[in-house]
Image (cartoon, rainbow, N blue to C red; front, top):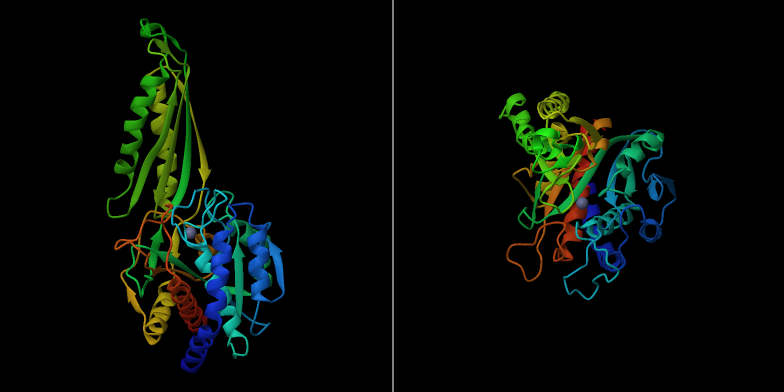
Length: 390
Ligand SMILES: [Zn+2]
């Protein structure tokens, strides 16, 4: 296997110039979630292997041994609805932007697959071009539900994501929870509006809303140990028209719930219903809580991480502190099915000592990121091979 890593790494160098050029083409012509067909076709052509469609415009294939277990390596297809402000020669101008580095991931995946041709892979390698990472319904979930992963023998999954908070040249892995489960709460409070001068004759959704906001914060504090990360953030409230003296009949709250433990998730969702109903009742209103379930917890397989770290070290890359956050990534749907690792790859951004954040209009990793992500993917594949005992 050491020999395989060496030959793979040196073959990568031959394919990087084309991969970087592909990165620029993908970056210059981004497609937002649900509209990634053109990007998928471009990358499929560059991969040059037979691929099947799944999850609408997604693509999946298999190289190496065609029988037995295989390791999936993911590249996301979608860009964000954001006007680019990087000033790069290959900047996008269609109002969308690869501000999450998916252009880099796709190019790296192409380099990894092309460099693997002619190598004797011990297990199948399944490149997965995934649509709709940034929106619901999740492309990863659709892929899992399609049954295509089982058909291809996927027994482990590897993801590598650029991250501005990781020092360049380093890769953050880390066993256990690295991202949260994310659910949306859509709360509607209904009452009987009225005149602001006669609040005693109305049932006032604005008052109920104000107390509901406070009660929501207490739900996590009352029911989740502070030793297990969880948070609930309200991102939107709406009630009434722009009028000072009309009490409206309806108020709306949108919130995101992030949890890192399956039981906490269920308990908080149940207790939110109770807290909201109780506040509504106090004010003579009624309330409805609609839960829009999102990604499950992203849990890195501990053994797989240990193996991958060792391969990173052999490749001269320093595995660094895990990048744990209450962010969410739908790669977690794959992690629910098979042992999986999501790694975060450090990048530089030209002209910035501190790189801009993901999802901002100035986020543009240098082209070195293609090599670094490709090497992380190779280390992940080799780690997964060991994890599967092959
Ligand atoms: Zn992303």
